Image 1 (cartoon, helix red, strand yellow):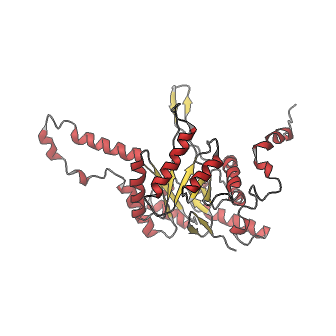
Image 2: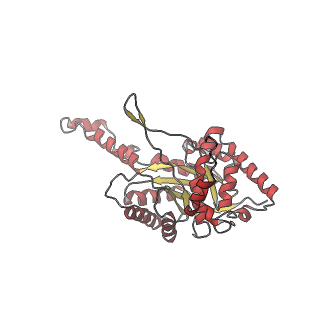
Image 3: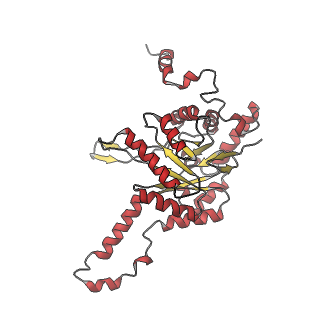
Length: 333
């Protein structure tokens, strides 16, 4: 049985990929993921804001009080003796690329064009097999239009693609008015993969302390529906690979994503709940299901339940909404 797949130009032994998580924060953690049976690893994101914050804090430390006590400068070593940039992240990429057999995909989140290009280039030089652009942000400025937001994604992709030669994926949110149109624009701009979808960690309110609380819940299987829909709609209509993420609890979700048309299925929550070795169970569950259904390869099953292949493609569309509501049975009236 052939479980191999190609994702963003990378040949993988099977479709199950570890998405960004604390497990990829250390070389030991990534080795555990590889030993657990994962086919590729997406590292946690390198954030430009964090780098800038560290640099600014260091500059403040160097400069504070020096006008009054010039001799204090002698107490500090030269600035190049400090790690004030992405050096630790780059070193982790280098070591992972050298020590691991599975592809290591770096993740980048920046706020300036210069940052996207500079750090993308450095990650390629460090040995990353690919790059995932985590364009994560809530556009709270009421003057910013949807067209401006979408153009920003295209501009970032084009800037990075002009800088690196390794494959580039974009991790998208589900909150776009015309997702299909944006996907085609990104595909035309050279995206090697689209990852559907990013999870916005939305805040909560503590009504006793009157404070805003950040939340970080693990995903559940119910979150599979939105990415499943758009993977099924996009399969066969764009050249970019489709990476599925969110809601993978077991082999069932892996199978559904592949049937919809995903080239790779990513998971974090399942590995955090059950440990890195759970990847093997996901792959074995996929293989057992394929054997029972007579599929000889992942390529054969991929997209068999996509929009263009199912008997009732309207079930994937908004026009089917009324039918769903009418078919609901209320047992409490």
